[in-house]
Structure formats: structure tokens, C-alpha cells
Length: 135
Length: 134
Image 1 (tube, each protein chain N blue to C red):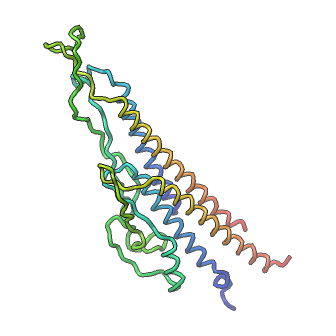
Image 2 (tube, rainbow over the protein chains, first blue to last red):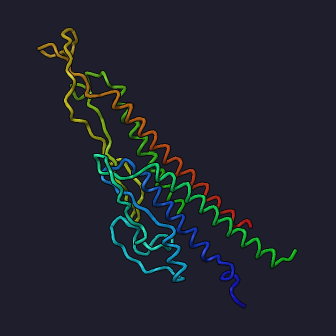
Image 3 (tube, chains in turn green, orange):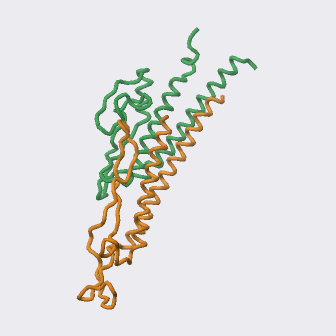
């Protein structure tokens, strides 16, 4: 019998949730450092991570291109080299380039995405339960 | 585990901004203080933020140190003041209340942003728990 979870895409959903939670982490770090001199904002492109994951079906090899990146081994299985600098223009004297409004809106949309994914995952399990128990 | 990490990061932001607001309130309270324990007028305090690394991971922010602002004191001609010098000038603190108010608004905005991140992480962590109840 085939693995029921491979049919239900739970692994893809959970990888998506992991990615969204790592993105949440990156955003929290940017917001905490909104007043830290010389701090440069980082970003994680959700679409890019998921496209690579869905295309290859596996977690990609790791590389650490900057000391401030999450360490090799990644974070929750998300490779470190997806976390990059935003390279925003900055007019501030202290060299900080965090755009607080951008980060807040990113966080809001990311959290909606996470809730979507978790709802779909929960729905999948509900269906499995119905199939097992009958009704 | 990851959302716990987000909450830790936001908590460091909250406490750092709170310390900053503490420094600002000390500046405003002492805007007219001409006598301190070290002698001379009160010197404006400022905080220096620094990113925290928790081992290999980025772990938020902290106040690295509190510094004294080296701007010269503001001299006012008040010959009758007990702290006046021989020429009759009194050295007042280098505190500009308008500047402090602006810094306070900025710190409070940053504090709120961190509080929002904390709240969101909490909601998402609880949402993930709902999956188990299916």
C-alpha cells in the first residue's frame, strides 16, 4: 500500500509551513534591529524556496555566503542561502536599511499564508479520519 | 521551536526599546539639572544597539552600552544662580527636549512593532496546534 501521506501532499504543506515560519523569523530579526546602527535587512523569498522544493522534490544543498546567515544545516530544514540581504537604499546616517512598513506588511501577508497552509493541512487530516472511520 | 525563537527575538527588541525609553525619560527629567554626583551639569544619555548572535543564529538585539553625549553644555547668563561661574554663566545640560520627544515617538513605534510581531508569532504557533485537533 502506498504511503497515504504522499498522496495527501502533507510533506509539501509542512515544508511550506516551515518556510513561512523561517520567513517570520527573518522579519522578526529585521524589526528587532530597526534601530541598530549598520544593520542590513535580510529577506526570504517564499516562492523561490517552494519552487525549488517542488521542482526537485528535495531540500537543496546548503551554502553559507554570509556570516549573518542562518548556519549551514539551515533553519527548520530551509537552506541558509535563501536568506539574503534586501539591499535597500537608506538615507539614515547610521547605515541601517530596515523599512519598517514593508516588514510589517510582509509579516501580515506571511501570517495569512501560514494560516492558510495550516488550515489545508488540518483539512487533509480530517478527510483521512473520515475515510478511516467511515461515518 | 521556531516560533519560540521568534518570540525570543521580539522580546529582545521590546526590552532594548524599553531601556531606550528609560534613557529618554532620564534626559527629560534632568533637562534642567545643573548639579550631578560627578560635578557639572547632567549629560545627555544615549543607548547603543547591537545585533545579538545566539551561537550560529541571529538572535535579536540588545543595548550594548549607555553612552554620555559629549555635546557641550548650554551656557546661560544667570549671575545670581548658585552654580554660576566667575563670569556669571550657568552650564545647563545638553538636552534638547524636542529631540527627546522625537526619539521617544520613534522608540515607542519600534516597541509597538515588536509587540505586534510577538502577538503574530503567538497566534501562528497556536494555529499550528489546531492541526492536531482535526
